[in-house]
Each structure stands twice: as structure tokens, then as C-alpha cells.
Length: 404
Ligand code: GCO
Ligand code: MG
Image 1 (cartoon, helix red, strand yellow):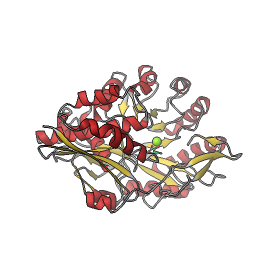
Image 2 (cartoon, helix red, strand yellow; image 1 turned 30 degrees about the vertical axis):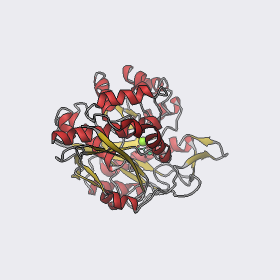
Image 3 (cartoon, protein in one colour; image 1 turned 135 degrees about the vertical axis):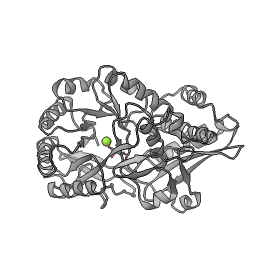
Image 4 (cartoon, rainbow, N blue to C red; image 1 turned 90 degrees about the vertical axis):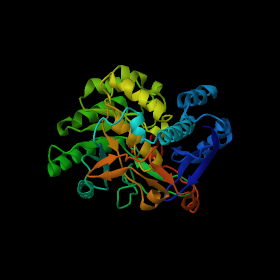
């Protein structure tokens, strides 16, 4: 079998998604997600101008060899643009291989290690009463675990709550400049424990509660927050520091037993080396889409497993249903699965990307369709073209840019 066509499809059925479609001389097709939120067209160019020409004529079964040649052959290794492009190729090849075998991808990854995949959903509120309503809504939808984010008194727009629709999904800013949010770490550190206290008081001790600090704290601030949240037994504290400084997590780890989750912006195993070997974290958060695909993510999970660290694949709305499908196959197969983030997509997105995976009773299953189980409606995709959109930026009261 040979690859005869490599096409990049950009569509915006509510938000931008970048998809690679490979076609073989036997008529089999494979899809891979290459969406890099806010920087989509850089990956489109990387794929179209530099990768697609290399794929024509290759045997699609040679996944490891293709991965290694794209990673090593570029000379310029790592980075989100490169790794999102490689991820799309990797997933498209796994899709083709599994279709050729007539099996759902999880079967090629060792088969199911569980019956279904547990998830967490997002609850957001501008204030605590609104957040409690949002938690109630997620529980009514069946979510077994909930991430809680709340507005902070004195701040007008903060991560997770500035502009969300009725499902809790962030509203896109399709405009020429990024939206500016504001930030005050002291106010945040004072407020978050009161949020946990209120949610525990309303929903009891058993509901797994997660929280995302979105890279905003210094190590000593993160240590303080981890300690302050201990009485409320969080399931995890996510991205407490900007973890490209891996050593920063040593202080946090020594100071608190609050479990830590890190890694959605990481793109290779080297980003995790210290974190994993020193057991500084409890969950690795990379997405198939941003980590170079199923091939390296599986290796990361096996590496993490040696240190009792579990998987928690990044699953916001900006991972397309193609990336989500690949994630759910991995989730079902790996032994050290922890939890899957799942926000779902708009009905229009689910029409553009018809998928076999299902969400019911708070759990995902990849389905039994051969491959990853996603079909792209190219006509509908073309009817919703790319629209420039930015993630927000974050500024302190004096105007200083802060981590977003
Ligand atoms: C999460 C993430 C997202 C990111 C988004 C950026 O935990 O789901 O932090 O909300 O902000 O993926 O593109
Ligand atoms: Mg996050």
C-alpha cells in the first residue's frame, strides 16, 4: 500500500480545526488532528509545504519509521508547530493501519483495559452561586468529576469564566486582536479556598473536584495554594506553575499532598523528564494532538507508569473530534489511565466530524468502527472556512503582561 494524497483541511464550525487527510492507492483514508489553538495556519504551512510532499509514495504501515524520519529528519526538533504536524501524520497512519486490519484502533494498542473511560467536565461561574449552578448542570449531564473555575472579586475577566456559553465552553474571539483579561495573584490565592469550601458544602465530600491554575503561580505561591486546598481533598491542582521550569515543582511537591497535573503545553517526553523521574507530579496531561501523536504518547504513558503516574489527556474544545477519538482509544487501552478531560463539541462540529465515540453517563467509549472512527464531511467543512481567532492575553492591574 502507498500514500497517494495528503490534504490539509481547515474548517471553523464555531472554532478553527486543522485536519490532515491521507489517502492510499487502495482507497483507504486516514485522519489526523493538527489544531494548534490561535496559531493554526503555522501548522497548515508546516504540513502542506514541508511534510505532505515527503509522504507521497510511502508505505502507510511504517508508522514508527515515518515518525522517526519526520522528527529526526527535520533537524529542528520539538516545538508545538512541529509536533502538532507530526501528530496529525501519526494519527492518520494509525487510522489507516487499523482500518486495513478491520479493527478499532484500541485493539491494535493492546485491547481494552477497561469497559469505559471516566471523564471530568468544566464548571465555571462568574461568582460562587453561578459556579454551584454550573456544577449542578455538569452532574445532571452525568459527569462523575468536575473542574471548578470561578471569577475573582475585583477582576473583570479571568481564565475559564470570562466569556463562556451556556455549556461552559469558552466563547471564541474572532477578532483582529486578543481579548485582554486581568489578573491579581493575591486575590486569587485568597478566593480559591473559599470556592472549594462552598462547593464541598453544597455537594459533599465524595465528588472529585479539579482546579486549573493555568500556569500563573510561582513555586511558593503554588505550594501555598496546594496546602490551603488540602482540607477539601482536590482530585488535582493543574498547571500550578509555568512548568517548562521542571525544577519548580520540587518545592510544590515537598510542601503539599494535593495531587498535581501538568503537561498540556508540553510536546515531547523531555519536557517531563525531571517531573516523572523525581515523581513530582501525579498526572501527565499531554494531548495526542500536541505531543506528536499516539506513538510517542503511548511511550510517555509507559514511562510514567513506572513511577505510578497516570494519564489525563488534555481534552478541551480546541482538540478536534479527530484528536479526541485518538485520545479515547488510548484511554481505553493503557493500564495507567487516570481520567479524560471532556468538554464535547458543538452539534455543527459533530456534523463536520461524524464520530463513533460516544459519551454517556459521564463516560466515553471509542466505539467499534475500524480505525479511529471519524469521518470528515469535507463539503460541510468547506462551508465553514477559517476565521482568525486569538487566545486572550493576561495583564496585571498596572498593565504588566502575566502568564495566561
Ligand atoms: C484545559 C486547558 C484549556 C486551554 C486551551 C488553550 O485544561 O482544558 O487549560 O482550557 O486553555 O486548550 O488552547
Ligand atoms: Mg488546563
